[in-house]
Amino acid sequence: MTLGLSASGIWKKYNGDQILRDCSFSFNEQGIYVLTGANGCGKSTFLRICTLIEEPDSGEIHYSVDGRMVQKDLELKRRITLVLPKVGVFNTTVLKNVAYGLKIRGIGGTEATERVAKALEFVELRHKMDQNALTLSSGETQRLGIARALVINPEILFLDEPTASVDQKNTGIIEDIILNMKRDSMATVVITTHDREQAARLADHLLVMNEGKILPC
Amino acid sequence: MFLAESFKTAFSLIIGLNAELLGIILLSLRVSGTALLIATLLGLPAAALLGFKRFRLKGTIISILHTFMGLPPVVVGLLVYLLLSRSGPLGFLALLYTPSAMIIAQSILAFPIVAALSHSAIVGVDRIITQASMTLGATPYQVSLTVIREARYGIMSGILAAFGRVMAEVGAILIVGGNIAGFTRVMTTTIALETDKGNFDLALALGIILLTISLAINSAVRLVQQKGTAGAGR
Image (cartoon, rainbow over all chains, first blue to last red; front, side):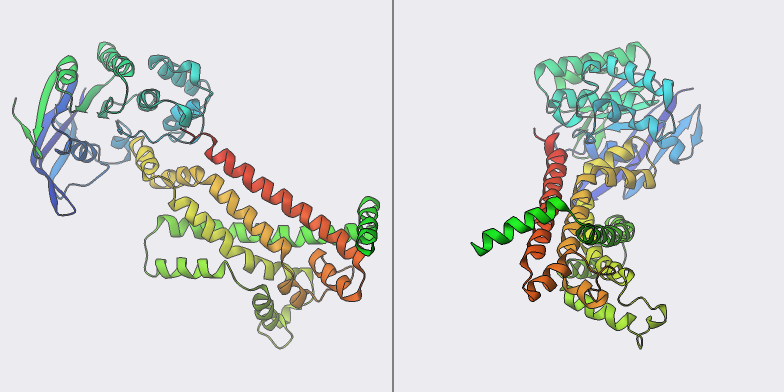
């Protein structure tokens, strides 16, 4: 019972510039999907539309399980999540940042504590749980973003340029985290990156975007 | 020599803290504290409404709020006086020359400060916070609460700034309170009266206490602002 995504004929314009042009993409099996392409080709916009944060100008986004369409409601939005390139940490501790997704779902107590600890362990940030999240380095902030997403057990995790602004060491750690997620079958992962070598290292399914359109590989 | 003598007496009055002095200080705090509470209870929802909702005349309302931050207290005093005077529309409430009238006047003075500064704090929160909470599955209401939480230090600064303004204000409460001894006489109105009478000792003593309270409020504002930016140092 894998949550699948189908995007068909997506068009999106910003300030008069056509960002996405008849963009289509679909999957219904687990693994790592890497969407690569030059900076500004529309990858991030496409991800925001896929995750229902933004509406397309035209085209359709559908989620389905075993061929049956899933309603695009809050329940669906809570089965997927997107980690933005600029993570958007809350001005509080690392622990409370990670617990946020659980808190808004009404999950607290021992279950929340255990899940937060596990997510922090997974991204190697457990030792910083009591630190203010705004004091983390950019690499640690990205890892915090991943932990904050993982703690809610998403069925599809979208990562928008997760290593664009981090050093080589943290890039390695983040790539390991992504590969471990695949190993543990934690979620279907969709990543955007402009780094073709990284795309080759991570991808089970490689997709290339050019001038707002996903090209067949 | 005269000044030194006055300061000496003023300090002995503060140290002695007689019942009259204590009564004046407590009434000041009660009136301004209640006014601040009312202004906060009304100002915060107004700030949230202006921060999160789109509606016609929103820009005009924000401009008016910012203009009213500098409302002259005597004008507010005059308006509240006209409202509460026996022949005014709310005269039947018989509130003129009572602490309640002073609270109403100070609430009007504090409201635009709380609302405008809280609104600025809310709209100043990085849009990425809104997007981040949305991506984690927050409802629109939860997103709003998250943004308000991120704006908390700015909001607290606004509330403290409003408290500083009403504590130091004299024009409005003098008009609507009447400066009645033991009933509506507060620190600022006592200072004005005692200075007029040439009784500088009590005026100075209250001035020192008022300055100390003002210093404490400003220190609190600084602390709150420092705490808000402490984590954002990098």
